[in-house]
Image 1: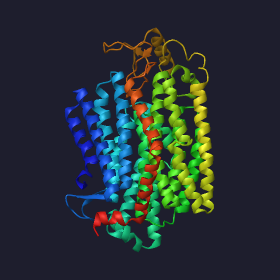
Image 2: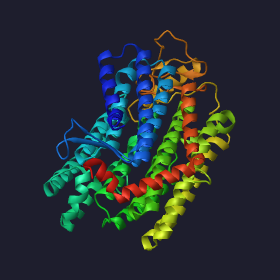
Image 3: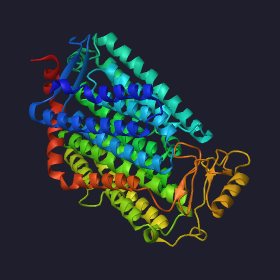
Image 4: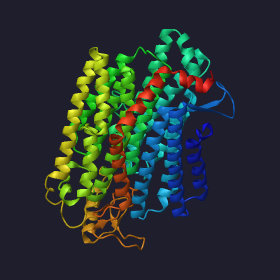
Length: 563
């Protein structure tokens, strides 16, 4: 089984090379390869998770070079679970994006740009979860970030370039800080291998060890969007295409949380910065959920709830007990799935009505009941309504806080309860505005209004009016400027729809009849979130074993270095 450990990283990279050689030709073959490789990664992830649970951590030294010279990859219970959840989510988002691209008849750009970048992103995430040393953790981050730069700015619109520039600057700053922390760690310990550092860092002076811990926590807090290092997120994610936003919001921030879990338990046991982590967790909960209350756009609402619920995970890491670590792991798996699902639903709403602005939506519960169900279930799950998995994770964390006692623990228990209630309020607000109330005047007009993704360029208002007029006349293809042109493809335009430049382009494709692959992928994501409730007992048992293994440290160290 050890030989399987590198495959979740190598398979997407190898297939990406093949795709770049083939180019944008053979569209169906390209789609089949993408689905096949992500399906294989999911199967491998399940096998590694089961093997790690039964036999302990699995490790492999690439090239048969032992630490500290060689590259070490390790799969234990935590990394196996994270790989499984992330693989399932990325596969569902790929199916969603394929359905969207095929419905838009957008054959060139997704195959030539989106798919290779997406597979590289998957490889970077897998490398991060399996990394057995700081350097390869950094490499995994960089692989992931290079792909995310492409995906975030795909389409080349001014809004996306601006948002992507902020994301790039923040990410480069965190990467430089990460490199400095790695260099300092190697200078004081003579290695960057996690298993070796677990012993050697205990011999380092306490002041130096605390400095290293603070630097690594800062890097991972930026990537996880922990307050006050989360200002970049609400403006970056909502501008990207719906599939990109979904996988970014659901998965990429959790890579930072995973890194915090790994380093805090393995390298800095009994860490001195626990109170600081709990303060950051409480601030993330409060600022994030209050920001969500103030928003009127669904994507921005979900972006701020993302920041607030990262606080739950940091809460568990800060307490650093078996129950709190177990609760944090449950909540990470739950949140990856539920947050991704909600952003997929937001993409469906945007495709159907041309906007996610809540003040311009209404009546969806009556006109689109399936869409209403797909939103309602994960929304209640995010709010933590019993007996859903969000409630299971929050209950575990709050019980751990009560058991730990102390001022910070009790403050976080109260903050968790208040955040959960405010999350329920925010989800109820979205439900009332977008689904329950009657549609605002003009929303039920015949045909669908096309909105340009650009609303800040000169002449946009006049161009948009031209697009609306063309849409009312029977549909057509909108150019990047927002002006309506002929479809150019010779293919029929769906009735009641305005076709834009595709999901990678500048405009929004809207149609009352949503593509079935997008609905199917979202429905499976909802079911996956519900499965955590059905399997709540086994999941909790697994995460408790994972927490025990993390805090013991010995199984991980022996798997890498031997007895």
